[in-house]
Length: 107
Image 1 (cartoon, rainbow, N blue to C red):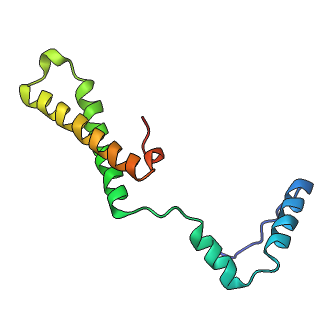
Image 2 (image 1 turned 135 degrees about the vertical axis):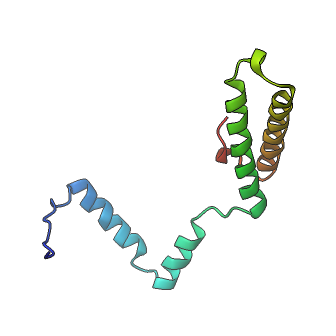
């Protein structure tokens, strides 16, 4: 199997203009400056925030699963699990709110 070149369409005028703006914006920066900028552009999340997101997602899945059930068919332990999952969601939301990271969960 041989590698063949795949022709691409030329850039549109808008794309070409955007590329030139980017080139001018970064023309006076060193490679280290660009790398430092890129490294600083990502949102840093703490271990506590990551843990709260995971706990929220697991608890939300549990709530979804249990609320889809007919309450007449639920065992007392399932009601307890539902209450506990809702409590864990609230705790995770509080952790995320304190960290200013509520946007990481949907609800």
